[in-house]
Image (cartoon, rainbow, N blue to C red; front, top):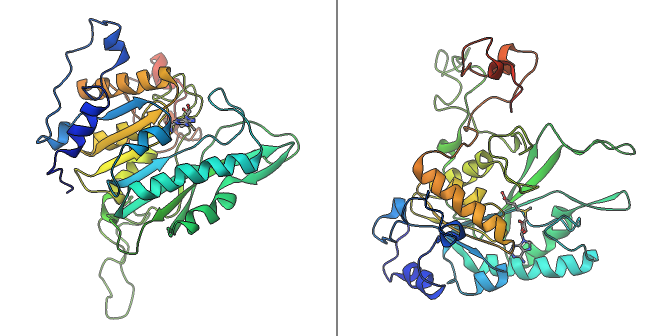
Length: 337
Ligand SMILES: C[S@@+](CC[C@H](N)C(=O)[O-])C[C@H]1O[C@@H](n2cnc3c(N)ncnc32)[C@H](O)[C@@H]1O
């Protein structure tokens, strides 16, 4: 478990304008919100997150070297979405180089850096961003552990090429000795009772009774309109995806950073599991939503898609999901993720 003997986080929070996590909803005097919790450095499970409306280079510049066990993010893809200006690929890569350099500086010696990207598309030609970003990470001495394929069922339908239904999470570590808790993310084996048929282990279970390694191909629904986590943000992380990274790459009490945090999905995943959360975004509305989501998490009213919930399968009764309401009510037949 990480410690904060010098109270460095408290100092950082005070330096950045007082109480961390102060929501602009509160600033607007929303009386329905409960009073803020004071920052209590000794209470690791309930330390307030530091979620700021700031440019990430400014935000990270004030943070100390080696602080974060996990930096997990999804940068803009240079596609001209609401929150980004489209620029020549070289300029985009140069700006990514600066941000990645800061992330590498902030990374703990046993830490992991997870960069989730898709394709940059120029006049119908695709550029896989992880391929062009690869040399930047390597130049910082980082080591690639997995290129995780995140596949999902929904997206744009392409007419002149195959519709894109996956993106990647590139998992880099600072060194060879990195925090890694595989047991925390095992998934049920296909044949849990299967036993060795012959040889010295005949009769013994052939698989790990704790479940199997989830592999480097992950299927999680992307956050579209029918997803319980959907906000106004056009490209949210599903919280369950980040939870898998948090649980396997950090220990309780470690610090997690998302320098392009959007509506704070990485912060939610970190806080759900007793980690400290840091993040920034340049869009004020997203930061407000991130802070409001944290409040709902604390109150127990934030809906997130549960880890381990099967993917909706239209060929099965209720899509293969447990019935959460009596049959024949309108919600039991609604399509869900
Ligand atoms: C792909 S989205 C990340 C969404 C996030 N993973 C979530 O679950 O909400 C990228 C985000 O980066 C933010 N952004 C773009 N440039 C930034 C910068 N220089 N500093 C901080 N945030 C920035 C955008 O506003 C956008 O919300």
